[in-house]
Length: 312
Length: 148
Image (cartoon, rainbow over all chains, first blue to last red; front, side, top):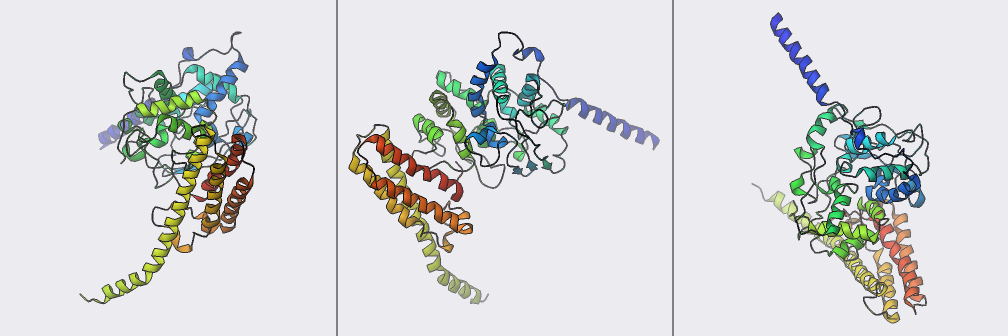
């Protein structure tokens, strides 16, 4: 009897130790971060370039106040809750306010949040924040974005905490999830004949744009990572029963749209039939409208180059 | 097995059918009107992009058509047309009727201004067209359910 107890206790301790080790937050090697402390670093130029990344990344859609328009889209106190089957996620204040936002963060803090889902206190962040896409961004784009975000208005006030159900409320568990689902490999392999524009589009879509987070189904009934063999084929919405559309060049997707029609949709919000953009895509489209036409054309070229997928 | 429940069901269906048909007819009518708006918008964009040579009379026709849509549209939302026929009408149309009415009235007013405006130059057309088509997005955001 005593022996059995010892075995069970040992197994529990070993299990806990294994869980602890496996779920240790992993940070970026500081040597790979771009350096912003030397004299050659031009913060104003970086911020200028970072604005493009800001719109490509769609930060404002979750972090600005719900329904914010115009200049208010640059105030980032945390937005509407993202209500899912796991509970309600609340995007935090990411304005440069020192106490309530990220004003006291270093570039390394920012990069680790954006690309490893680890906050400065060493806590895992929930993948509702799309770091599983942002991990594909270049160190320079991360630094430029950080420089730009420091120029935005400081907003007072902390966003409310997430309210999640068990076991999803255990942050440490995300460490285990990351072991399986956080990687920086390309989401799809473009054909060798893909144009430079399509390759530029791949970066924008799979990295900052994080399009797959809503348009690609997840494995393990929604608990897992993105189902890359069904890349951009449309998926059940996180917030409910409806689905996001298939945006691959298949007849059941947007195969009938020309590249210029896709680019125009991203710019003006009008489909080829002159119906107007709807749903959560309204916010996304208003971000895409801030990009250059070359960037929108690149996204369109990529969406024409990826493998067509029938819808579910 | 008694025939009574079947008879009762048949009677119910017979009673419900006209109402159902009316709701569906409204849905179809408003879908047709929105399609027409899409076609007119497409024609307008053709002018703006220079894909079709500018024609002031046709430009006026675009706004006249849209105005005619605007005057009919608001009356096509009876209570029995909330669902069916793949409608994308949002519940807000019926839960916030005053706001919906105001949105339709704005479209009606903007199209009226545009069809009565001087449309001699493409630039004049562009200004009116911008004001008119701004209605699409704002109204759709509030009163339509769509996924893309």
